[in-house]
Image (cartoon, rainbow, N blue to C red; front, side, top):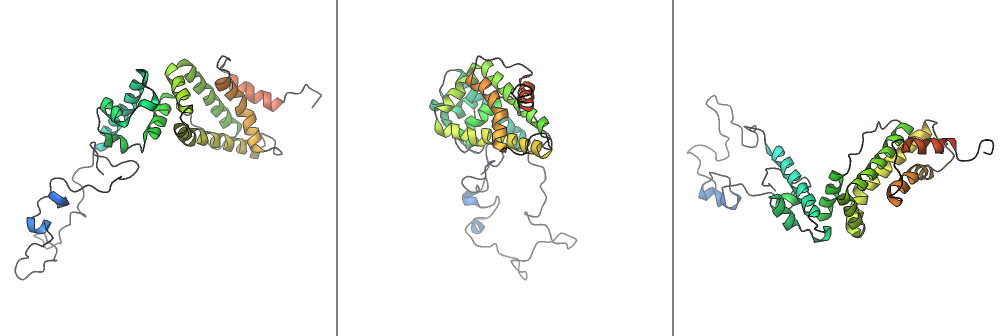
Amino acid sequence: MQGQDGERDRHGARNGGDASPGAPGGAPDGASAGTAAGSPDRAPAGTSAEAPATTPAGVPARTPAEAPDAEPRRGRPRSAAAERAILDAVIALLEAGEPLAGLSIERIARTAGVGKATIYRRWSDKEELFVDVVRDMEPDDPPVSGTEGLADLRVMLESLRTRGLAQRSSALLHNIFAQMKSHPKLWNEYHGMVIAPRRLALLEAVRRAVAAGELRDDLDVELIDDLFVGPMLVRTVHRPDAPLPDDLADRIITALLQGLAPAGRV
């Protein structure tokens, strides 16, 4: 389905293709009434109705399907602008005190200055939209090598710390998370789209560290992952008054690698 901004739904067409613009019943522009009704145009005497048109040089002319586009589509910049307007509209409504549960697609569309169809072409429901709003407000996930073990693990632990700082410094973000946890469908959507992939990335980094000989290979990798992530989650989620110093990720990794037993008692 074509949208107001000229771009197809990123989730696929929702209701099938649109009829060609400017022609009733989906008939191509410029078609005769007889053609639109299903009757072929009369062919010139002595010619076949199915014979392709030819150029003056006798070369068969291209059909409309074969003809190259005269100009590339230019919908993407407007699409990006519309998406930004929608995200900003949700944030503005939340800042004005509107609860997540009270926001409707109609209200968001009106605030953003777009049609509801423009929203539904990008997000299948409110929950999916709200997840993107939260991700837009959070710090971006940092890039990792995908080949390192402990080095990538440290980058991702540091990302946990910076997201914790963001929630502490933004009353709005903190309030959104509190509301999300009281709405199971929204929280499950966030968990599936954001938390689960992050956890999987951490687990894969632990596996790479084990394979590289940086960590023991006689322990369950999920337990090792929990030992690294647990202290950071306690500091960022369960102890909002606890300090989050810049070197916290390094301190957690060092403590685990060195162990907690006094020297000579291991």
